[in-house]
Amino acid sequence: MINDDEIDLIALTKALWEGRKFILKTVIVFMVLGVATALLSPKEYTASTIVVPQINDSSIKLGGLSSLAAMAGFNLNDMTGSTQLSPMVYPQILNSVPFQLELMNTSFRFPQQQDSLSIYTYYTKVKKTGFLEGLKKYTIELPGVIIKAIKGDEEISQNTTTSKYFTLTEEQDEIREMLSEKVKLEVNDKDGFLTLSASTTDPNLAAQITQKALEMLQQYITTFKIEKASAQLNFIEERYNDNKKEFEKAQAALAEFRDKNKNVTSALARTQEERLQSDYQLAFDVYSGLAQQLEQARIQVKEDTPVFSVLKPVTVPLEDNTSGFAILIVFVFLGVFFCIGWIFGKELLATFKKKWNSEEDLV
Image 1: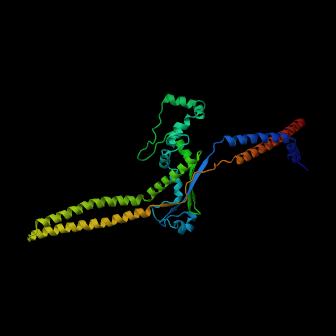
Image 2: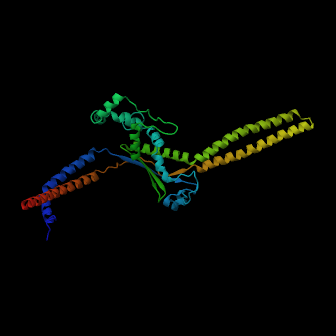
Image 3: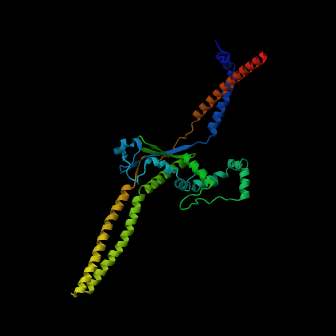
């Protein structure tokens, strides 16, 4: 027995059958919209590369990567060195302000452009001169354009920085957000590799950006990784150069004294020679010790420098990411759900009206 508050499933099924023509027409309309969307949507291509960071030290810990330590160069069981940089931090480097500013100011070969342009120049100068962009500027964005013209251009020039912080313009910030969405780095903590990818509307441009991002990432990671060792090396080099001068000065002074006092046998001369010999020996010992430290520091920098083994080099993608068939299927499902919701909604509304009217009659 069906309660009054329940919807009659038979009635709903009958309503769907009676509205089959409406459903068919609506689905056809949604199919046409899906085909139009698939044809008009800009194609997007993704270029990618897979690399394995070879880590010589056993002080990085990264989840399940320890299982591939022997094969991939990882030894991730301890966390002892303060200068170590976990691969889990690499995506943060990719999305950092200095990295993205450098990337957006790097020149690339854009389609239909004779000269190489930076990403910043292309998206702020070239792309904004198109018809749709101009129409948007003088319609939707017209109030903002007028206000900006009255106030004047108060934006800070590109790449304005201080020693402690960066000052970005609105355009730079918008391009940063775009790069964060289009250039991605995924860390596979199970198999121990990194996947770097870039997506653009041009396959060659996607490959260019991916290759440049990889080179920059290696440079930034190397800088962070050897920062302490490089500072130590620079300090020892300075001390080495200073003591080298002191050693040469003491050596020259001793040689000059011996040349001038070859036949002198006085106690004063011997004492002076012993003093010069002592100064020379001390300078030599310090100089020799610093030379050894300098060589060790250079070796340490080499050892700390990370190496990336490229498993999959960057290649120009041949197929775009968008699937016209998938878009069509989505629109078909949307059309079906819309029709079912519309018919069920009408039935519910009719039921509520009928109940409402019956209660009014009772009153």
